[in-house]
Length: 269
Image 1 (cartoon, rainbow, N blue to C red):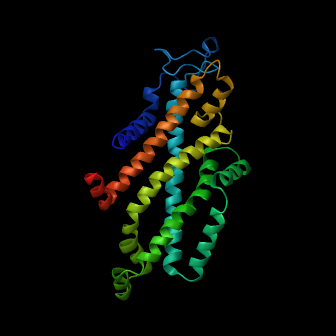
Image 2: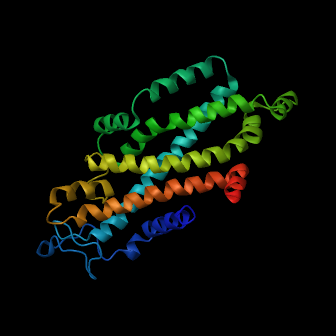
Image 3: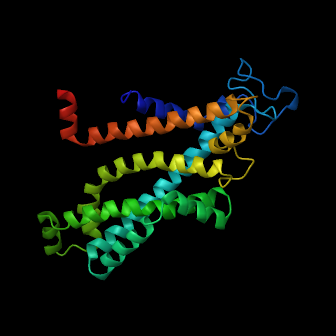
């Protein structure tokens, strides 16, 4: 399964990108005369309580979930890398202030803090990204801080400093390349968590606008009709499970590929 996961993830991403082509109808179109229609050749995942096509909604929901999650992870990694690298390499008061800030941010449960921020800012894609970035950057910053504290004592870094290299040059040329693989693996696992958080917020009605299909919102509207139309919640839930599973297993494969020791141990087994 671990080797199939990247292919499954690629398939989901491609399906999301090609949603306008693969979708059988407009995700917001409805036909009340066909509500709760079960899965068939004309509606692969069935129709919802308004006669809307669940298959198209799931496809477009994938675009929303992946776009928001990717934006959150990219911003979180960038902020965590820049802030933690600068403060930790400089040391002193800057590093101490960073450490206390990370302790404060991570003292709150991430999902609850994001929930509170979205409730204050209002439900929208932009506010969702902001709220989850505020709670997500600290994990990457703590990882970067620990690695920079270790790397800045290495001989090649000391040598670069002795030759007169600026702090920016040392970070870009000597420290950041050694952080790339660690951050790539962490970002992959983090993406799965953000996908779940986005779906959870959408399930609670604090995601994007109501006219934008999301998996969380689909599961929320389907829970009221589990008897008449269980497929309304089932297929978005299945898609979410497959996406998170494929991301997690792809992260495991990436970690093994980037770590030669783990690769050799896997070959021996």
